[in-house]
Length: 201
Image (cartoon, rainbow, N blue to C red; front, side, top):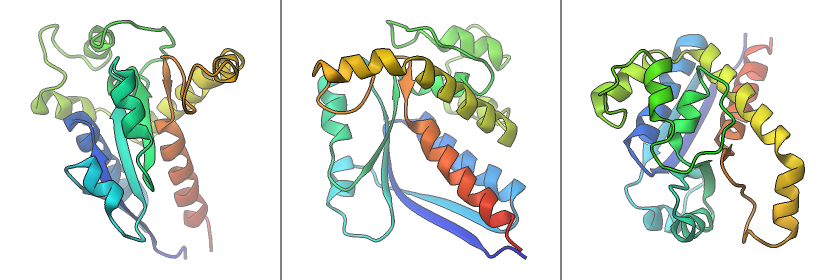
């Protein structure tokens, strides 16, 4: 019988989509793994999270949003693991249903694709709480795994070009032009730990 797997996080979220997604992920884990519990406790200000003294892992989830200066400021917060999507969180949602590796310019560039893939109306506001719930209700464990697969393919296909960007000193830290993210690695590693624990006898 596998031992109880418990993982707690203290979190800052850039927006409602991120917060609701992480809570939804907790429910997915509860539904699929009887011995696993994942919790995310929200902190309203990134500055507060950065100064907290705690043994619980601290994570900050945010987007690039075409604001490089603000993005770099957030991602360098001390003692906080930065979980990001570039250009925005919509990309991560879309990857649950579709491979999408195009670079976009506008912050709303993924929205039509999301409406299509999640069966929404063309006028639906995907930032609205009710619509976010409709989207999340269509995301199951297999969809999270598909998003991770799609994200890894994107990042692997860009690795040589992205290495050159870093080598030329065009980034103050390790992140890449869109489409880009590291959010998939957080969920990939967490799922691997859960599954490994679940297979223990």
